[in-house]
Length: 194
Image 1 (tube, rainbow, N blue to C red):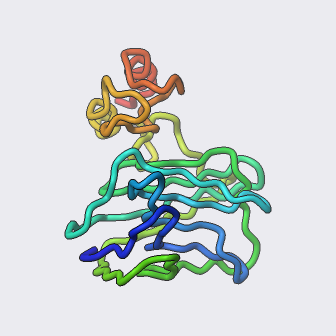
Image 2: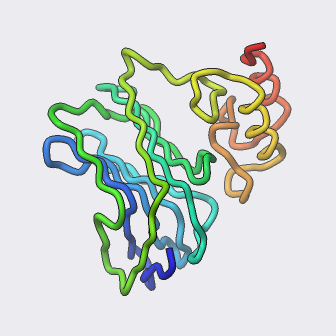
Image 3: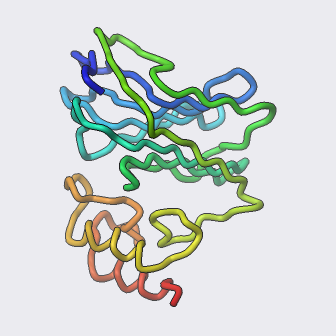
């Protein structure tokens, strides 16, 4: 990204869109909220939209690896935004089952209220799984199908952080108390595969 074009609140652009049967069901990109540009994950949940924002702010003139992880399920679906292989934000318990053909658009498929925006892209991706065939494991922070040393390293990087901190990683908050502490590490240790 060499220029974002975002100059006011609610201005946004998306790097990835996921469509089912011609309707957009998920967006991944940047959005300005309360005068701060943040990573944004926006997902259709039935007839409503659910939005999550990162605690970190993206910057121009930096290359990012961006991935949308999508778990299809009629009631307990899941969407995650990974930036540089770190879980940045996620949405749980949403209706993500799709019918028909799924299409993915990369680049700048949608801009809203943006001035001139320039993007160079070579590392975007989408992982789609169905709940019946692939359940996500608690503690599997890099979503490789196992809880191992790599997940412990990711959790350790956010140890001592609380919701809102730059190092905060929602996937490492295994007991969902909005802080990454010893209790989360003990839960993670109990799930480690040797």
